[in-house]
Image (cartoon, rainbow, N blue to C red; front, side, top):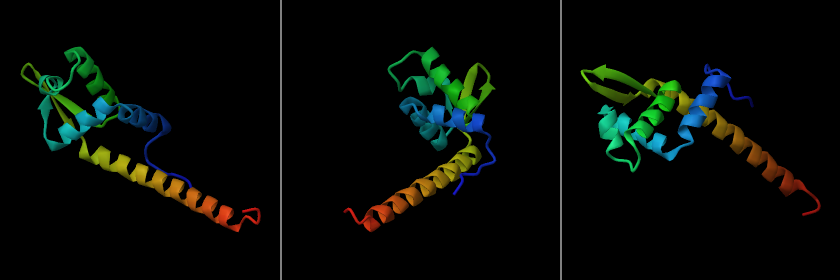
Length: 114
């Protein structure tokens, strides 16, 4: 089985990099619930506002969130369509890994040395 996606390798790399960090995963979770300003997001973390902005930028580069200006505020919301595509990609990886583990189980079960 080969994992196939309409996402190119660079996009997949950005997505995995973005989701590798717990704060960024939390930002995605919070912005799936509803749009929040960067200030609202920053208030929940023991880090600087600038650090939260950088996390949001990484998520934007991976296209997992969308940021828009409203007056002086920058509002962030998750992109459910993109997240659905990522979920499909992860499901393919899960299926690939499960099939490999199943094959390994079959090989070990059939091994005369065991």
